[in-house]
Image (cartoon, rainbow, N blue to C red; front, side, top):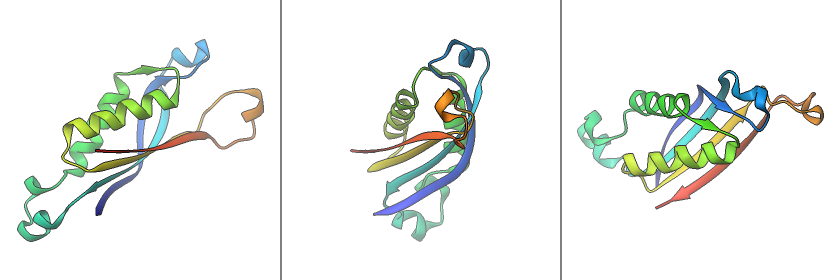
Length: 120
């Protein structure tokens, strides 16, 4: 299985369990891997035969920007299911990094995150 990926995609969304986290959008960083067969695109060299990385990035930025979530788990599931519905892929791996997580125990952490995989 082939893998198409985007690493370090910056998005912003309203996310968090604390009320102050829902006053302004927060930055998140996404790493996305889509599992699909790329042989047709390799042969044709036609963008229509593959996934347009720019269009995918814009789609994810829009979904995140328009959302409001309490948990990274909910955002990850939302984005992953949207990808599976819109694109012809066998599976998705999504990693979300939240660099500005708040909480007393997290004061020295560089961030928190989640990584999920979903397959058709």
